[in-house]
Amino acid sequence: MIEYHVRVHPSADRLPREEQLAWRLAAVAAATVELDPESAATAVDRVVDNAAVAVAALWRRPVAVARAQAHAHVHHAAPGARVFGSLTRVSPEWAAWANGTAVRELDFHDTYLAADYAHPGDNIPPLLAVAQHTGRTGADLLRGIVAAYEVHVALVKGICLHEHGIDHVAHLGAATVCGIGALLRLPTETVYQAVQQTVHTTTATRQSRKGGISSWKAFAPAFVGKVAIEAVDRAMRGETSPSPVYEGEDGFLARLLDGPRSDYTVLLPEAGEARRAILDTYTKEHSAEYQAQAVIDLARRLRERTGPLERVRSIVLHTSRHTHRVIGSGADDPQKYDPAASRETLDHSVPYILAVALEDGGWHHEHSYAPERANRPGTVELWRKITTVEDPEWTRRYHDPDPARRAFGGRLVITLDDGSVIEDELAVADAHPAGARPFDRAAYERKFRALVEGVVTATDQDRFLAAADSLAELRATDLDELFPAVDTQAVRDHDETLPEGLF
Image (cartoon, rainbow, N blue to C red; front, side, top):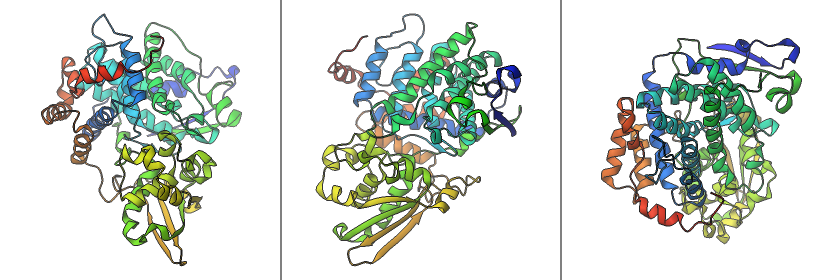
């Protein structure tokens, strides 16, 4: 790997483009590198994972809205791109919009946590849409996915956004453009311009994840994917971009991050180095914010030791600064204790998640968030006894440079009404690569079958999984097989009940 120091430069420096971060990211995308077998296999797993969570979310309102908007942009010229739950082919940027929303809605796909946060699987919907529209093969798609993950992980490791209130999708845009560049084998210059356009236009604040969290949380990465495709189209036509978008004196670093004194280190692979960053990422066993995954597993483990939960006086989760400040009581969001809060807010409330997991001994992507579940009196009483505190040691472990030792969990201290204390801790979720039951291909398949049960027939489940397994050999005309077959008429009937919009 090569270390690149990224800092602010005044316009008078005339920073050569070859020394700009956007160019270096683009060079990673444009490099010709043999696909690493493990990386390719993991990319296949994530394609399966994305399809599973997308199908499970087909009837949820944000997904139906995004799909309806996409259907208003049917691509009449060949060939367009597919949308989950539909046979209609639409313009690729709108397919990315609909499919990106479907993948993100349940907060149930992959994650990467380092200096910042990421859901790298958000890169896949726009890449799949572009691959379909441009007639690329499964091998082309795999190359693009692995490149997008490489860039995404590098940015998340090197540049922290959240401490400045900037949403993590700012890194997604650059990664998606690089994935499209690798998929299409675009020249470095084209990718460079598209990266800068996308970063410039998709940077948003973290208010989307504060207070009363709205359905925009599902749309946010889909919006970035849509914009990334449009930026690539403009760059391919010769249009240029604000430059240098990261290092300029009024650029990303100077105005939104550490200011004029910004100095970040981004690690990128050498020209011939294997792209293996995707192997550092991990998926979710539970439909909740990743930093709650280990907490759910810990609650499941402690449930038998606590006895009747009415005896609980208080519960304190000692955890990292990130967990405490983002999904814990340290966020200072009263909505995290509100039974009337949105699903998106409850998904980012570790006190709620812990209360339900202790009561139920598990987690369900629908039932655990149902309004009647959140309003259960016993749950509300237990929920309001739960707080989080930042523990410097857990913060240190969260940022451990060794991925095998990095910890995203915490120590749970339960005090009962007689003063007795029950304690336990868990560093990583059971499904994490370093956990008790690391997700393997069989686990991805089980998750897929569980989530699509009753929506996709057993025969069509088998057909989809076989297509995913052979992704590297799929012809351009075979990419439709990456969309599990569902009752599209039922989906259309459902969508017709939605209020009308502009399109």
